[in-house]
Structure formats: C-alpha cells, structure tokens
Length: 116
Length: 114
Image (tube, rainbow over all chains, first blue to last red; front, side, top):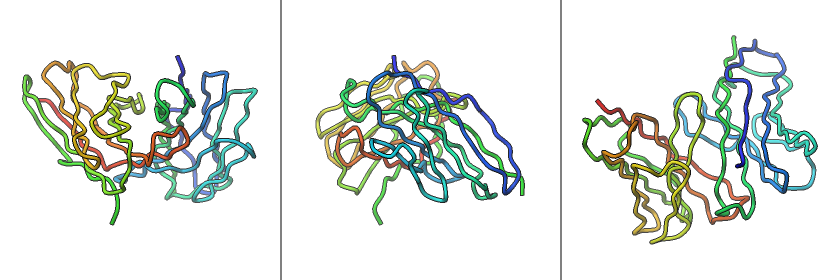
C-alpha cells in the first residue's frame, strides 16, 4: 500500500537557520505531491504542490520543495526561517487513478518550533 | 466569505452515545472529506464523497457514518461502535475529484469521550 514517511517528528531551530524537512513516499508510478501547513489555531492550508514539470516547486512564504523521483522524496526547504514559521507540516501524496481520484495519503507530520 | 465551517469546535460525549459533527462549505465544491487527526499519526481518511448522494469509505470507516444529501453539507456521525473516538476531526473539500485538486480544510472539531 502507498505510504508517506516524515522521519522528523519535531524540529527545533533558531530564527534565520535553514530548514529542510524530509518526506519520502512509497509508490513507483506517477504521483502528485503536496505540503500542507497547520499554524497554531489555524486551518490546515496548502503550502505548495507538484504535479509535473520543473521538480523544484516554489510555494507561499518563501518555502520550496524538490521532487527527486529516484529517491522517492519531496523535501521541504526554506533558506531562513522566521518565528512565524512555527507550525506543523504535513507531506501528502495522491496517486492518480488509485481507488478514487482525490484520495490523498498524509504523512504523520513534523512539528517545527522556531526559537526567537 | 467563502470557506468551510465545522461545528461545534469542542464536543464532549458519554460512552455509548452517538454524536454528529457538522461540516458545511460554500465553495461550491463537488468533493468533501472527513479526516481524523491523532498525535503522531497525521491525518487518516474516514469517508469521502465525490458527488451528492454518493460517498465512499476511507481507511478507517468502522464506527462512523456519513450522508451527503446536499452539495454543501457532509455530516459525520461517530457511533458507539467506534472504539476510540476521542480525536480531532477535520473536514475538507475540493472543487472536483481530480487528483491534482487542492483540498481546503475546516477548523476542526475536537471530540472527547468521557
């Protein structure tokens, strides 16, 4: 069965540090990839997504993610984090044609804490 | 102001009682979803509906039921058969059922079984 792994459960960084959150998925075919973010007290919202084309995807608030097909990875990056980036981050995968078209599989999430 | 509303925000129930969580959207989206979020487990799909009067079981449907009588509404009932119902429940919608469609989430309902 398809699955998504986020190995970092809790990441603590200081402001201005660089960020990379890992995401690996298990499926050998075509996938659609997403990163969602849940800020404290707010709705879960889309950060960025990849369907095809340039494997380096840019999202909101300076985030980007790189799809590396050979590594089954879609890591999230930000060169310099801010205190306002404190949130929980979820990687998600959707396999076209799998069961039902809009079924997304979420990873377990990574909690990011930024020290001011 | 378009979006997804879930009510109530907090819900308490006694063991053995059924409880219904509300989810309404005014985005004119075809597809709607219910997820359960537990610490360290991410989001797990309970049920989803791609069109009115149709819905499908997700990965953890046992002990839950849904209905989709109107496009904008997708209520979830947590029945007494659900063994561990205390959790945070999220409702979402997407414009269609396409694999590339973004899902939009509501604020969630935290259910506690006493």
